[in-house]
Amino acid sequence: GAVVSQHPSWVICKSGTSVKIECRSLDFQATTMFWYRQFPKQSLMLMATSNEGSKATYEQGVEKDKFLINHASLTLSTLTVTSAHPEDSSFYICSARGGNSPLHFGNGTRLTVT
Amino acid sequence: KQEVTQIPAALSVPEGENLVLNCSFTDSAIYNLQWFRQDPGKGLTSLLLIQSSQREQTSGRLNASLDKSSGRSTLYIAASQPGDSATYLCAVSPMEYGNKLVFGAGTILRVKS
Image (cartoon, rainbow over all chains, first blue to last red; front, side):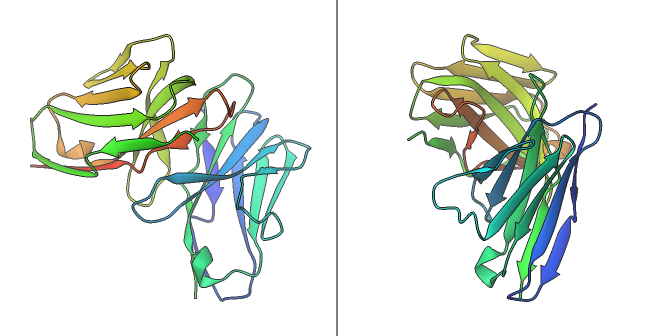
């Protein structure tokens, strides 16, 4: 079946550095990708929606200059956490959909900022 | 604003027991409701999707019901197994938001052998 690959699965970085997370659809063309953030024992919170070839739409309260999203192709979207701080430590999950196909989720990325 | 609540937050049962997880949502204007499973440190696996016009969906030992007018859904797991241990998330697709999903905080299920 369709698979969404997210990389890396975990990353530790120093405060002030930037981290890039990739989300790839492996066997379908993802016209829309979603980025979520999940704090421990809390629900997934949608950060932004990206459509291939256009700018991402950010949810209220999400800083677009801090969380840069690029969806340059039908199989790849990236989330870059710029100038990361400890409070950005979280579990980031992407999901992807192509046309009317079901939504598929990646396995998530655990980000720890020291 | 759509809000999704799941009860209980955590549940521990012996193997073989039948169990019910509850989900409620504040706005009945939804396209569909989905139940997901999330294993620790992993992404989400879709279990069941119920369209707004449907009352229930079944897959194997899982049965999900939807009462849109009262803003409620239940996930019934029959003959639970240790492998069912995971976090179960309920999410609705609000008509107001199109493609987006609004998630509950989940129910952490532990099935003891």
